[in-house]
Image (cartoon, rainbow, N blue to C red; front, side):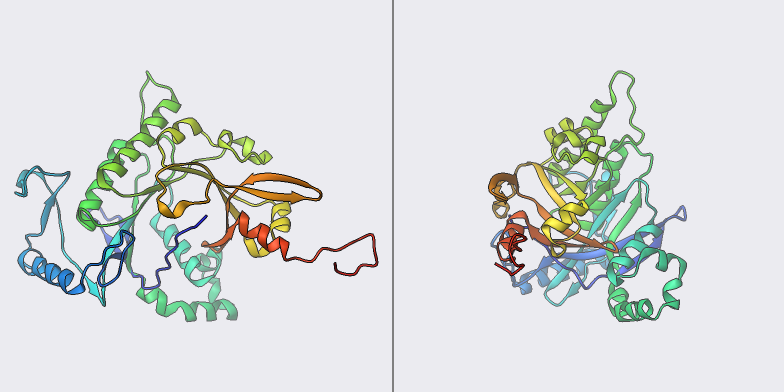
Length: 357
C-alpha cells in the first residue's frame, strides 16, 4: 500500500471580509509546476507557462477583462449574461504557480479553523493558543517564535466558507462559483466538505437515508463534472465502539458505498492496539472498506496480511497507521510495516532464565 503525501511549507493566510461583513480564510497552494514531470508523465516548459500567463495577465487581468462563466460553454465566446467570476491575480514563484483549495465546513467557524491550523504548524495545543497562555510558557513561546517565519508565509492557501444549514443544491452552487472564480477550469484543487448529514434538505415523500444518498450522489456528480476530488466524513454508529471495523459501523453505509470512490474507517487505536502495534506506528488507523478508481499507486490497499498469534496464523485486511498530535497528521506505515517490525523485535521467554532469544 502506498500513500502519496505532499508537505507544503510555503503557505500564506489571508482573511478578507465579504460585503455582508463575514470573514473568509484563504489558503493558496501549488497548481502548476514547470520543468517537472507530473503524475501524468508530462512536463511543461516553464518558458511556455510563463509566456501564456504573462499574455493572459496583460490582455485580460490588467485590463479587468478576465471574466468567465459557469459550466462548459459550447463555444469560446463569453456569454455576458452568464458571467460568474473575474480572475484578479495569477502568481508565479520560481517554477511554480499557485492555486487554491476550498474547505467547506458546516459547523466550525473560520476562527476555529485558524487556531487548528496554527496548532498543527507550531505544535502548541489549541487551548494555549486560544487563551494566549502560550506566552507564559517558555517552551511554548520558543515553539511559536521558531514557527513565525513559516506562519508569516502562510497566506492564501485555503478558503474556508460557512455552509451551515444550506441544502446540497446551494452547496454545489457555492463550490462551482468558488472553483471557477478562484481556481479556474482545468486547474487542480481539493474540496473538503465536513460532514455528511442533512442540512436543509427535506422531502416528505422520502426517508432520511434516501436524502443522504441523493446528497452523496450530488457531490459525486460534481466530482465528475469538475474533475476534482471531494473529501468528506460521516459518523460511525454504536457498533464501532465495540471494535467492529466493517461497513456496518458506518451510518448510511449502503448509500455511501454506492456513490463514493473510496470509503474507509478512520479511528483512534485502542490502548491494546497501540501496545501491540508499537507507539512508533501512531495513534490512529485508516481501514479501507470500498475502493475503486484509485490509480496505479494504490496496490496493496485491499491485500490480506499474514499475522501470527502464538502458534496460530490468521489473515487481516491491510490498513494505514497515522499519528495525530495538535492537529498535525503524519502517516506511520501500514499493517505490513508493523508485521515486518515485529519480526525484528526480540522475544522474551518467561519459562527460562529471562535471556533474550
